[in-house]
Amino acid sequence: MGNNFLRLWVLRVCEQSEKHLDKILNVDEFLRRVFSVLHSNDPVARALALRTLGAVAGIIPERQNVHHAIRRGLESHDNVEVDAAIYATTRFAAHSNSFAVAMCNKLSDMVECESTGAERRAKLVRALRTVHGGAVRAQGVLKLLRSLLERFPSSSSVRAAITALTAIAADTVVHVPDQVELLLSIAMNDARSVVRRSSLLGLKKLAEHAALWPAECIQDLV
Image (cartoon, rainbow, N blue to C red; front, side, top):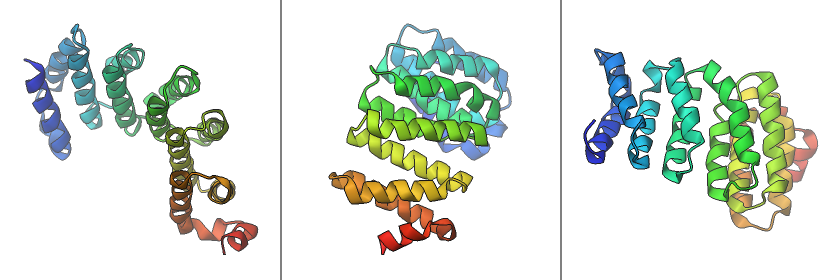
């Protein structure tokens, strides 16, 4: 696939042509060319290849070799490649339930790892938002995200956890009351303005389900 400049343009075209990707005449040949880059010694080239795979997730959602490549990218020691793998994970999880199920524990382990930096953890938390499908998995992800609020109190980690918790609560609906209580508690007690703002934005989003709000929460808000 040429040099990294050309690979970047291939990525941009794939990202901007998402609705027309089904017009690719030979998907197998396209993947063969992308996979040839994944074996490169250049981590930037591998990162561009992973992002390209993520950009075309809609037409190859169940390709097991791609799933394996993304998992391998998450285990890389290069930050650029890991970030690209996280992006690809979010893309494929949105199209493949089997991939989301397979990656949920992997992402959870990475989030809980003490050596994971705050910025990386925030990206992983955002990825967890896409793999929570199903009541059992959603419950597990919610439990993990709530524990992050205390274990990793940096602003970026807390804000990412708040946003993810709110999104999952809105999707599942059944968790709205608990999330409203949590957001109100943060809004009233956290000293950081950026964190309070995130909690208020979460409450605004959950206002769509105002009928599920606990009466005491409505009173506290007023």
